[in-house]
Image (cartoon, rainbow, N blue to C red; front, side, top):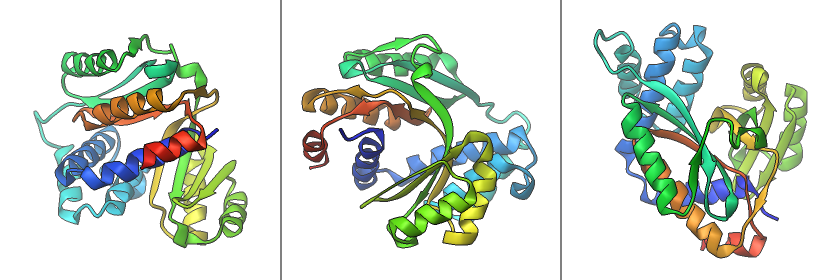
Length: 248
C-alpha cells in the first residue's frame, strides 16, 4: 500500500502547477511573523524563525518579503495570529489534522467545518485523531542531494530515525526535539534542504480505494486553499494503482 508521503507528494506536485504565488508567500509570511513574535526577530537566535526563513527561501520568496514579515512582528496593533489545530475524519474514515494560523477563530472554524462536511467528513474534538500520529521532524532533500545510500548514511550519522527515498526526492525523519541538531548536521553533509518542518506523521494507516481517495484529494486541496490553513496531514493508504491514477 502506498502511504501518506506519496499522497502528499502528489498533492504538492499538482498544487504547484496551479498555485497562486502570492497565496503561498502569504502563508510563509504569516509563519515568519508568528515565529518572530514568539521569540527574538534574529533567526540565528530563534530556531522556529530560522526554519520559517529557510523554507521561505527554498520557495524563492524575495528577501524584502522575508524581512517585511519579520518587521511586522514588532508592529503595534498589527495582526495577532492564533495557532489552532483541528482534527477529524475525511472520506473513507481517513484521519485528518489541520494546522491553522488565524486572526479570527470563528471564521476559520466555520470554513474548516464546511469543507469537511461538503466532502462527507466530520470535524471532531481536539485529540480525536491525534493519537494516530506522532510529532516528528521532517527534512526534505531533492534527488540531486545524492543517491539513496548516500542520503541514508548522512541521515544515520546526523542522528535521524528514518529515511524514505523515491523519484520525488528524499524525506528524512527525526525526533521532534532533535530537528535543529539533525538538520544542521545534514546541511553540512548534503547542503541546504528543500524544507525542514515539524509534522504530524501517521502511525496507523487508513486504507481507501480510488473513489474515496479522489474525494479526499479534493477535500485536502480545499483545506490547503484556505488562507488560514498552514498544513494538512492525513493517514491515508492507497494501492499503487489507485495512487498512480490519482497522479494522472
